[in-house]
Length: 60
Image 1 (cartoon, one colour):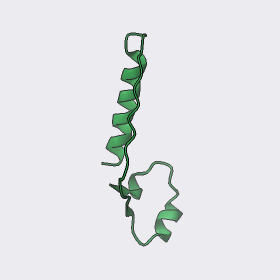
Image 2 (image 1 turned 120 degrees about the vertical axis):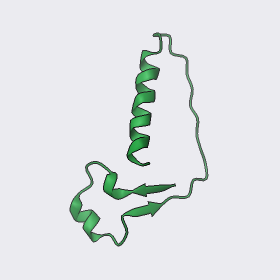
Image 3 (image 1 turned 90 degrees about the vertical axis):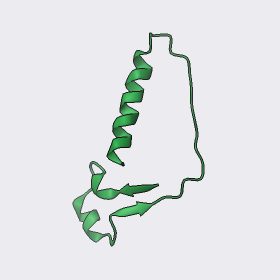
Image 4 (image 1 turned 30 degrees about the vertical axis):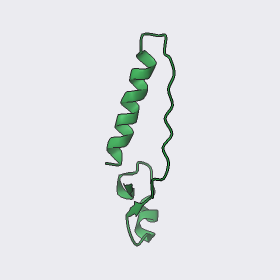
């Protein structure tokens, strides 16, 4: 997994300037999957899924 630090919101530009590389590689060794039942017609689950996609697109 790679993260482009220039796309991280709120990261101070002075910190980016002091780095030698703006892309870091993180080894992905584990994954955790959570699940639950949402009895409110899926509104919370849909919102959480939308936020997950938004965050994933920031690091893609």
